[in-house]
Image 1 (cartoon, rainbow, N blue to C red):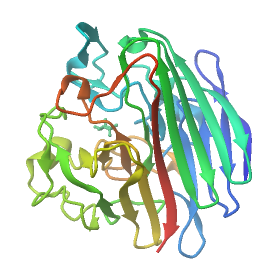
Image 2 (tube, rainbow, N blue to C red):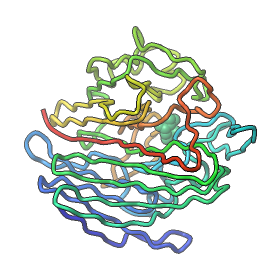
Image 3 (cartoon, rainbow, N blue to C red):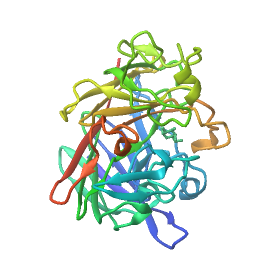
Image 4 (spheres, rainbow, N blue to C red):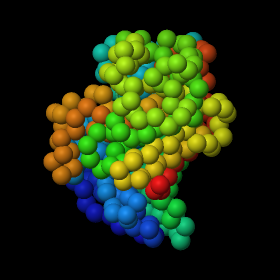
Length: 350
Ligand code: GLA
């Protein structure tokens, strides 16, 4: 196991940022920058032992500064959308930026994906970890409370990347952290032939603005039924209102057992390379997003142009717009409580 670091660049505000490489004894390597806590690369073997980079992203800091769709980033304070950028907490009303049409998305204009985190390398014989910390001030992007946030990325010899999220606050606030990596287990092309199983019988349908209606709907007899392994592309163009609203999949799945136990959320299999990725989490939901907004206007690593469905995201999370949806699990964090979640991405071959 080893961790190395290199200079990655300087932000427009003059802050220097690093690129860390975590490598395990199997040759799997993960690169992470403390700018936005972004995972810039994940190199994993295929069934013949050939390594490929299975996430979308950029080679330089400039790429992330100028043209990004949250590639690989930590998302906070609130992953996904809050309707009209408004919510009430214990009688007080809060206003957030509307950075996605009428709505607030992924923490606002300068979310956790665009800030510089403090980094510390932690290495032992079992796990190579990078600990990132960030203090978000009371009122930042409109959210109440000083928030102390800590995220650790740990790579094990079992080819598992474990992400642990911790936070505390000094005022009542809302919180929903995730990671926004776009995976493509073939290392190129689209993800339409990837086969996906999701551990969910229900999802949260959305309106045209991709805000949940509040309903919890069964996936049965819909193209969102991934209870058995199915190719992502098999039904993506079906005439279905939910798929039309999103231009594909961009939905929160209600994971089985809404308790906060660590359990499998999804399995993805890529038939050509044999690569398998298992997603496990303590979170109640997972946004499965099929890269619908990628439109060929961004060129990423090795000059590869990211067209629609070039990658897909498994954003483990609390449900979108929960602060305005009394029937959804609560995202309230109070002083004295510790926010704590774990998500892992485990790679193997079949
Ligand atoms: C999430 C959202 C999508 C989109 C992407 C970023 O997955 O649900 O609608 O905003 O992030 O492009």
